[in-house]
Length: 279
Image 1: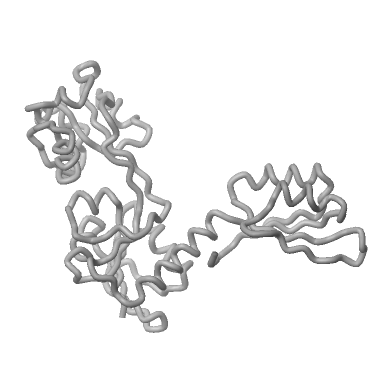
Image 2: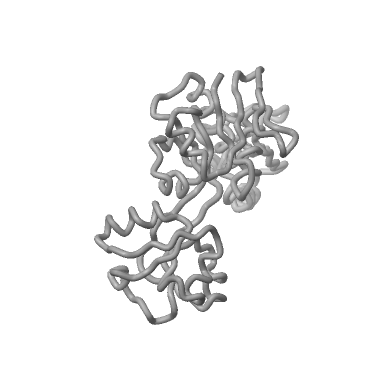
């Protein structure tokens, strides 16, 4: 059986579970369950702390897992990153009191608080800056105000939390992270099937099916507006001067495409969600 590590809680857990369900797997129904077997798909699920997943997979104790790229790098695991999963985006930056630091080199010899000491240390070593790291387990933005650090390195979304703590962002981006599928150093049987299924879910999230009726004389213009992944499906209608068109297009911008098709002369334009796909 393929042994899959899944986040048991946190920001990645819910979306990861939904993706696996959409990919045809049967996961846990009780949030207290830590181990679930899906015999129909020949897999076992292990629900673990997101920070521990890369450690287990990197050691070969589990075959594949879903975790954050930040966590994978922070624990310095031997696990391989296999695929971006398109959710859980985050950006890591340095922050300190306004005006105190301008460049990364200004941190030389000072204290930097972070919940990701491995990730931050590797970044600073790469840039030739030596600091004293202050590992914390959350509430990093309070470290400067409480006097235990000169700067912090933390996840930034809008920057509101840091500003409320009296800090401003400076220096380069440490990392842009998101959820990833990771694998053990030696690929296990069943890994590629899981990967194909998850890729199918990602495609389904990014694309929709569009159906519409159109006068035959406008077909070239309409297919220029929505050419599809490969080529539209064209079907005759009872009226020989009209055809039915089916095309797969990116979800983003679908309303603009509908507007253009309608203005061109298409009618009965329908948009349908895709639940799974293989391209």
